[in-house]
Length: 108
Image (cartoon, rainbow, N blue to C red):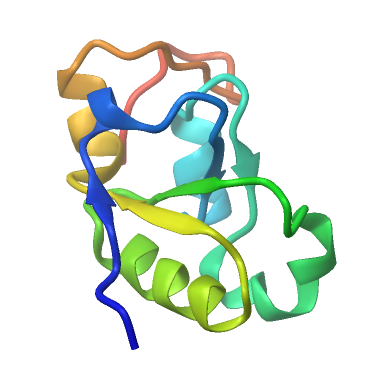
């Protein structure tokens, strides 16, 4: 088994699809504008929502859940990298964010 690749928020490969595996309440508080949201526990049943020919940059709040998701996706034939530092690092890097709750985007 190969070692999982980790990337910083500023080194997400061009053309990669951001997959956010946080819980609904975390997503609603703030997320990357074009990210796809599939909570970690729903990933097995929603695998068909992902294009196996698209590179995925998997993100969560701090990197733990996204690391598990990345390993699982790679084991199922998907190309995925783990975003180190998660949405906390995303926010600190000044990357764009939107919220679904009508408030200023934040990371919870």
